[in-house]
Length: 348
Image 1: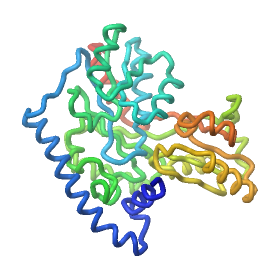
Image 2: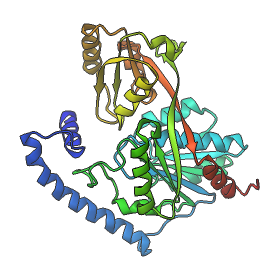
Image 3: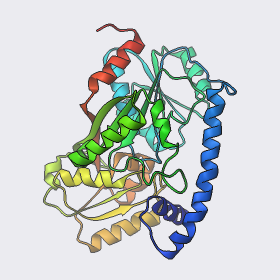
Image 4: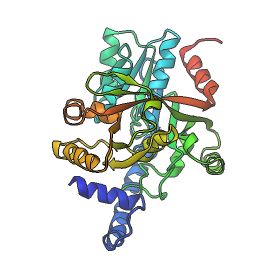
């Protein structure tokens, strides 16, 4: 089943062109049509007040994406939560918790920040509010969770692969029709340091057409250091620059992870890629170990998201190095700051 999902993902991303792919495309296109009809009816029902949005008793910032994974949404949620905490206000991160790796990341990086996990985010938020003071909520993966009214809609776009082939799931990687971008209060372009200036210029123009009333922020991931899975011992990135390494990742855009390492001077001789949120097995990790050993690999590196998804298994099988990285804003940080201060009623 996992290999089949991977195959359809490659077809959707236009990376597979064999005979089977050509046969699959019409079927996927039909499925995309009906998916699109469902999405449009769903949003229309809320727009026409046939379905009701719920207003929480505190401001809400939604952080979401148009595409299937890999945009940098989770690091942005963390960035906002840290920023709110720095001005002595209490944020609540509301997440469905479908992917426990993201929840583990939040709790490891920000142990003092409250993370509410539950499918019914309204119920989760109100329950937490009875016990703790909450000043503002961050709705993780909130674009599709229309049931909660929001004050600010942030949509994250991956500069490396903004909209795929422009088709909806499963023919493409879009979870929403592209015009939905026009609902954004703020559009955050991520991985802007991994594309050329011309590519970025074209993307900015496209965003201005799709979301003319939205404010634009540009961000990137900054590698901080590496640490050992077993004992958390830190190593500088410079120490890995002359060693042969391999990577493994089950994230939306593994290429961004690989490029960050490459830009840091780390040479990778083998990259193992899995479907986003893949649950690793002993067989997976044993295969990574054996192939890496045969290739003369000296160290294996993975992402924090992968590590926290299968921490014990990965530590025992590979004891790899983990890349610690944080989202940084290249331009437009004052836009986010101003939005937060206004929502919290704080004057500059």
